Length: 398
Image 1 (cartoon, rainbow, N blue to C red):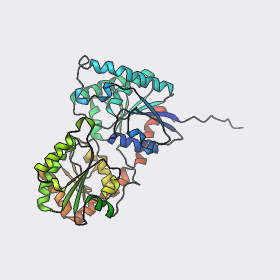
Image 2: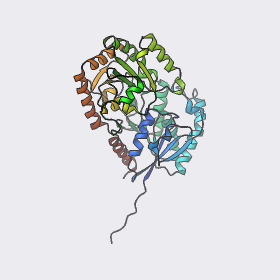
Image 3: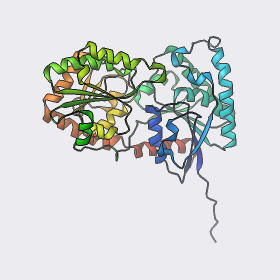
Image 4: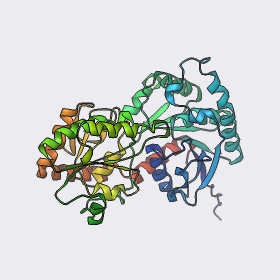
């Protein structure tokens, strides 16, 4: 009789994210986790007690662990970090309780691997994993511009030695000084392609927003924060309007809690540029796929965008895109094929690109078609899940 081998239970993967509000990193996590092979991996979501994003229906049936105790360190901003050990002594003291709570969770829940999803969770979860003697994956989704934060990240990586998944080559380049110290793999973000597809605009949605079939709609989707380039876009819209008087701009996104006044600054800028009457400030929307089917041109004018998942959503919706030659965007958007790339911060060049795609409708359709094919070929969330599982196999074995 053949020998019977016991079936190994699924490996327990703890996904750690300390954010309170939904951002791009959390959205990517919400889309990745349900795609994992549950026969092989059991996901646990580790979050702050007041995290609103963790209630998303996508995580229904998955174990939630509110393991982050309240701590000032979770509310600290990157630019508050100081490069020296003593200068950040208070943050180190505040971190002890959080790290201890995470370590106890890892041991108590028999976690096989920690997969951290944002900068603070990399640092805090990294030390917890080391103390608990568990393997660690950093899913690196940011390009850091703050020197002190970069220094802390690299010093921590030398100590805890994570396996780094970078969402673009631009993100991965931050680890060039550590190529001999950490394992690193670039896995571009993916999206659930069944949610985004070409189609006619909704007449009900047009009516809700006060749009007519003759309007030429430009959309930007992203957090309202300076590096996303909204001020440049508002300057460009003044120039676009001179050539295309029926143009309308839909702005989807909200501010963070520490930048609550930034929306007012942008609205003041729209008034100063004389375009306030054509800009619709729509805030956070769950119907982004429907909104994209309204638009003629999608724009993401950001500076050092780590990846640009909104670009992929627009491409999957068959829309031509204007992006910047910055960060990971050129890895996603093929210039002259799926859209147009411009220099970040250049309002005149941005206006010219938008105007061209509004005027040359056959070119816009061709770029939209090319983008649709590219999104479906390279940026399916199921592909991302399989590549992430390959990292788990490399670390944990089969």
